[in-house]
Image (cartoon, rainbow, N blue to C red; front, side, top):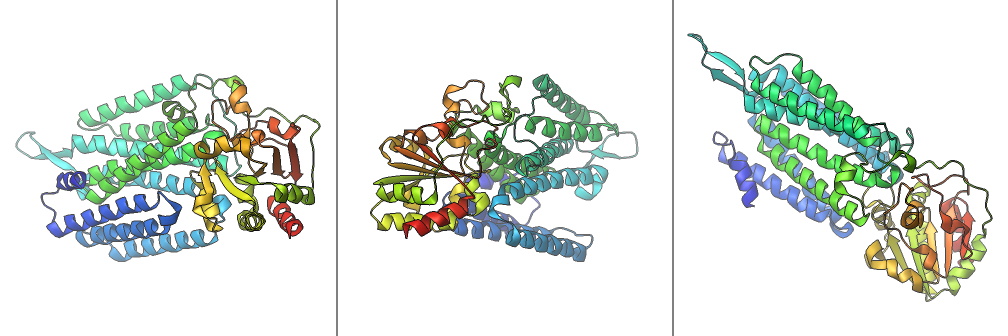
Length: 488
């Protein structure tokens, strides 16, 4: 609360007290929203707090600022709201990561457009300061505002282009394998250094050369592109979280430029929470946070994810009846959901299968890997949607030791997060990432569409060919439905 008060006090001497109080209430709502979103049980309430806070911030801003055309603003809000409502109603859970990446790109572009508008017409934003220059007063763009403007625009541009690449990778328009450019780190560091130098020149030069601001934008768009293309599919959930953080810092920088306390508070909360989540995920994956945000620093060209076509090797294949027999004879079953479950929308029938097993006296648990799916918490959201009890869902560090005591590890649509190559193959793009030890169970059942093709990171899973593994080759939902029939 003290931090919020300090933010409100900064540059707000001419703002009415009720406005500051309203922004403070909005800030508290955003904090409560973040707290609520930390758990599936309270996520709905967290979303409601966020909606209330944003409504307060938008209404107060519209009421207290001179709007050139209020009907146009209201119409734009209505159009955007209808589009957002329609997308939210129609979007499939499998496409949620792509949607998040797309929305991040819009936040980044919004920061760029606001910065461009402020640069083109600084007088309308109150960014001109008087300088002594002869008998006639002369007004120039405030040097401090120039720095804030350049930083907000640059971070926004990086967020936009990086999010576009993340969307393309998540949506299958680009390969999920790392795309490693020669001397990419030298190029990235050189471009970032150039942006910093141009920002200093932009702030210190009067009058401002007209070419500097556009060049900063072009360089920042290039950096976003260059940072994300070397990052492989296994690290994509961290990228989504990181881009979320970038969008927050872009909004905060523009909040300082415009003197808008709500933008500063909101941007700082989003930026810091996104950065903390990215760090936690990197730690869980045994990844270096600096390496990931630097665009896959430390990977070499030999560790690309695409290992070519799958090798024709012997494996054990089974039917739904075989799987049902093994499951109902087990004392303990650990279910490992992955992106294949999301694609097939199999979470509801999976919960039905688990309920039937529990009625037969089988202990059932769910094991969630930090990066299962395509965004943080993807599997948790799907299981919560299917009303899976929260006390049956466990994170990797809490359940990994239990696979050795499990009779069956039931893997539905997961690959990279169960691949032991992460522990043994130093040339693998997932090397060093903690994985779920499903191969330690007495029997491992893998639901997979076919043996052709590897996981999102492009690495073949050796567990498929082990003696205790039975491959159930089918659509995930169809296979689980057949297992349910066999159990019944």
